[in-house]
Length: 188
Image 1 (cartoon, helix red, strand yellow):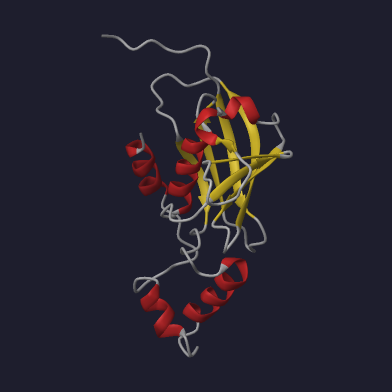
Image 2 (tube, rainbow, N blue to C red):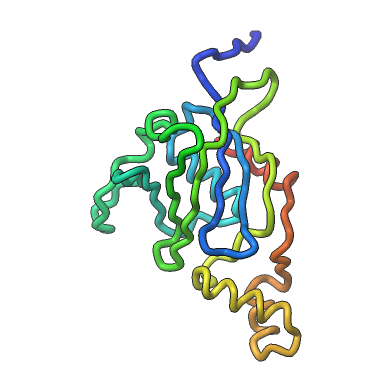
C-alpha cells in the first residue's frame, strides 16, 4: 500500500541549548508539528544522551506542561495531550525545557524555522550539535564544570574516581550525530 504524504503537518526546526554552559552544548533537531510534548521530551533525552530518570517540564509563557503526578505537587497541563503546534510561540521565539529538578538542566528551545516535510525523510531528525550532554546526576552546571575539570586533570584528587563513576571514559567534546539519529529512528 503506498504511503500518502500528509499536507497538514509542518516540520519545526528547533535549537535546544543548555543554559549557563560555556562553551555551549546544543542540538538542532527537526520534528513534526503534530509531535506531542511528551514525545518531544523523549527526543530531547536521546539527543542529549540522557536516561529519562528524572522529572521534567516545559514552560511556555506562564503555562507548564509535564506528566500530571499528584505526588509531585506541580500544577501542570498533561504534555501527552498537547501538540507542539498548539504551544509554540512562533518562529524565532523560545520556550524552556527543564530536566532533573535537582540538577536543573534548563534548555532554551528556539523555534528556528517552519518547513514543509521532505519526501522520504523520517522525523524526528538531529541535524547538528556540539559537545556531549552532561552525565546524569553530576550536580547541575556547577557540578558539571567541576567534573570536567577533574577528568581533564590526571593530577586532580578526584580524577580516577570520577572517570570510574562516568563509566571509565567521558569526552566533553564528543558529539555522535549518527548514533543519535539511529536512536531517534527507534523511538515510537
